[in-house]
Amino acid sequence: MFTGLVEEIGTVTAAGPRAGGYRISIGADATLGDIELGASIAVNGVCLTVEAFTDEAFTVGLAPETLSRTNLGELRPGAPVNLERAALPTTRLGGHYVQGHVDGVGVIESFRPDADALWLKVALAPELLRYIAPKGYVAIDGASLTIVNVGGDWFDVTLISYSQEKLILPRKKPGDRVNIEVDMLAKYVERLAAPAIAGARGAVAQ
Image 1: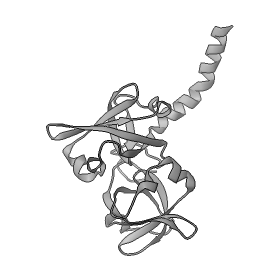
Image 2 (image 1 turned 120 degrees about the vertical axis):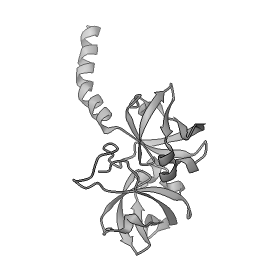
Image 3 (image 1 turned 90 degrees about the vertical axis):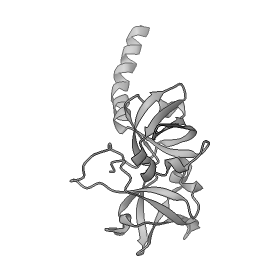
């Protein structure tokens, strides 16, 4: 479990097929402070397991499902990534509950400066956009952000100056893909309400 409060920006040092699978090595600082084998680290919002580490970097493996559902397969050496270690029971929840289970990818449509803030507009498929609500939460590349507006096939958020310094999002450009994890509560509510909604529709049909 994570909070969506990115701890640091790491740098990919190696990425590609290795040892019969696909692995990424990432240079970091704070993330390595209490690292151990088997630890969970969110890389651009994707919960991954540490398979190896040194004093300067750690290595994680990616399953085929992860490669198909996220943007991690696009990473190359030198690419910056958002990093967050798993939350502790004593962690202040300044963001929201983030599982690190990315639902899909969105596409950056535009950036728009507004004083010292930065508007970010993201295009998203309908099957995920239905979970997006104004003033709700969304995790974009692992960063917990508040949704401002929602359109027919897009939503937007604003990045304050602090967030612009601490996240990789301002380094991206229109057309880039970003990992999206919608609020898990929205998915649970939909699933719990589905039988009641189906029953109501059946009653109306009769």
